[in-house]
Length: 95
Image (tube, rainbow, N blue to C red; front, side):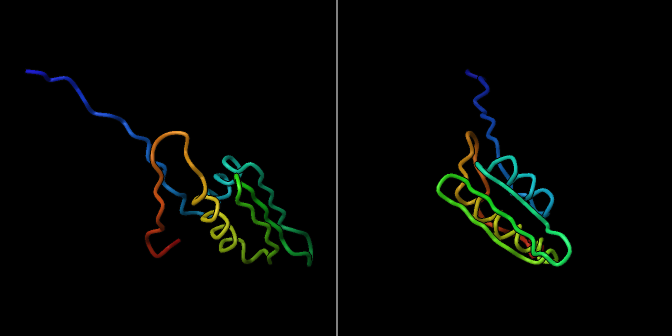
């Protein structure tokens, strides 16, 4: 009787659900990431590139959450982890 352990550990990459977590992910996984929240009446600017995908957006600072979320999902879908699997679908109402 063979009782050898045949289980395999698989890394599961879950997308961050908060703005700060998404900005950290973008800064550590993108080939290029820059965020400028602007000063006074100037608009904020965010830019990211990952492989063939790139995006550059100017926005008002009060739109930070929505803009970061859109950029995060764009980059998340083109990112390929070195190992493991990634969750590729948004779930829940509070995204």
